[in-house]
Image (cartoon, rainbow over all chains, first blue to last red; front, side, top):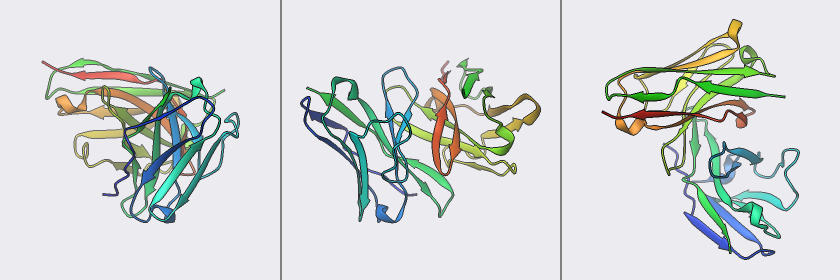
Length: 108
Length: 116
């Protein structure tokens, strides 16, 4: 089945830019969605269709997708951005929903 | 305001069965695609199953043949019948609405522990 690969962890200082990648075979041909999950809470959608922000998600969060890598970018990182982030695609060939392994974002 | 509330989790022995429920308010499950997902302790998210508005159902390979998703429109509730449970099924189980191939509303989850 389709595989999504994320780095287990990313660390960034406050005010800097964090980039979380999601790798997959020709992922640029798929639509990628991103979720943020804080400890003890359910996931929350932060980016849909590669780059669309749901209402209430700050402009500091943005997404891109090309080739074999999709990227979630968080600008001007704040302590409140510390969380686990997951990418997600629909595997249309088998009608399955696939998640990356997740990336723990640590704000130094 | 949309709310999804999962119930039915608990401790069950290996080989046992459990039925989870997810009751929705603020949305109508009969017209939506509804999924179950899970998260093992300290692990990532895993999609488990989906039921379409037309009653078509799909499953992850890890649960196919053991789990059954269904819904009761009159109760605005979806279910996950889990049989032949294994230790590796231990997880928090979430229900979520799928809209345009992404999950926009999630419940708070219910914990299933499979252990003797």
